Length: 309
Image (cartoon, rainbow, N blue to C red):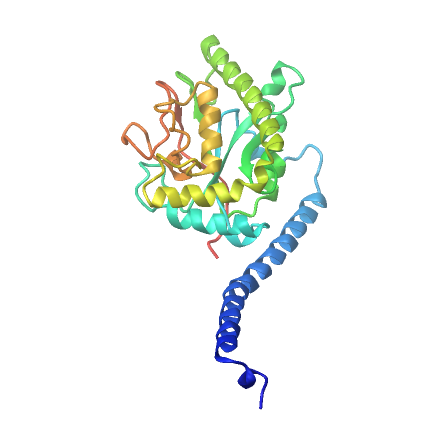
């Protein structure tokens, strides 16, 4: 007679319940653990690849040429591979965000293949002199992440390290500026506007990186993202204490601080999704990022584009 058959009915019920709970926990844990360690290995392989990359002096790589097109205030959108998220909670956050916040509706001429669930904003690096504000090699990408909290990474390193399917650049243009015109010479007014944007972004970066570190934001990033996405899909985002998308909240807040984006309501940044950047505010009253009069985003430019597999 087996041990199980000798148990009382009540003990058998408890044993079955314990087994069911264990299976409920273990079944999803197995693939999550697999993807976790695979993501770590993939990240280490990419770091080694970037670190050992042969760089020929005076010859620019494609990535170096691409980041030269960036200026403070530009926005990067990421179509991430959730399976490459190192942290399990961030992997869940990525899946939930892509499922609940990303849609396939028209994007007013800014359409691009991809499901964009993460974003960052280009900010000046530590200033050395006035010219360094626009030096492409001294520009950083400010973003909210689970790994580092609110962090800023050099553009070239961030682009080379990304494992996203697609990375889009949305160039920010001030009133009267013509960034697509190679012969264009910016006016004094344009230079003043650009300097103000750069200086406000420097102070914004300093304030929020310090605050995020003080509050240990990185530990709560994924939870905030999941709660924000659930709040959006259930229609309670206006009352939610969590931003709909933490990364979009940070970018919109930075644009508002720099004077480029409108603060329509107190919750404008809190209710913004990443893909709202791809909708032209001139044709939409909601689900879009509203910029101040004269400011606009140019059409998206692909910084990185790989297969969907």
